[in-house]
Length: 349
Image (cartoon, rainbow, N blue to C red; front, side, top):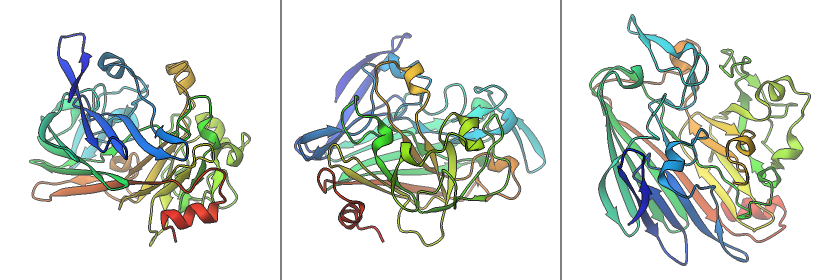
């Protein structure tokens, strides 16, 4: 554990290290449960796999949500309002008229309480009181990070005393090249998704699933992000790139896989979530000049589900324990390998 600086109000933020110095090694802040650093073995030595900021206040002021635990609700809720069991609720609007990633502070700008810290594991707890950001119910949530061999595992556990929308996720920006001069769009991405949720100009889903076949969103076969993107695709034009929820196919064995030919590092993400948000990080050059770029792969329930009757429910109710695990498994098949080799090393089917 070490100090990671102080916030403007004087609160001290601490970084907690887990893992092996010569292997997979993570540094996690008690501010927002932020994954500030993730070092993995690469073909030419250790690789910093996620983008990070230098001190606590930079994270508190960050508009890009780098590395945070996202909640109560990942992604967007249209109009910053919803009705639940006949009662209307108004949320904090922090992206125009909409609610994004839990609101003004969400989970990512709160100090979490450390309840366990071992050499390979860290558990953080946060109690979100009723009315926070407009949500009903007192919510208790624990986030458990663990380094397990070549994998970083994150488990969310939660309970609530009144029904509430709940859709936690994780928001690291990955660039497995480990070099800020290498565009994140050169990474090969594979996602076993058959559908995408098309969005309106304010990025709220239109309420239906569109097949990915023949579109910029078809990553069933691995491809570099920048090569697959069609600038003439109306959905790409709306978001200025990728900022869309991909609907995963039934029976898939993973959420996504990513590979950097530059470093030789590959990653597989596993989770039982029905969808994954793909964000290409197109706003980063404006938000953090000189930081480099990265892309986000956020396993989650559907955005705006509380307002979309056709979407699967994302309501947590009293007496129903919540658990979701996100696993990031890393390997190093080597530089400039073809995808078949990468897939074999990652155990993809």
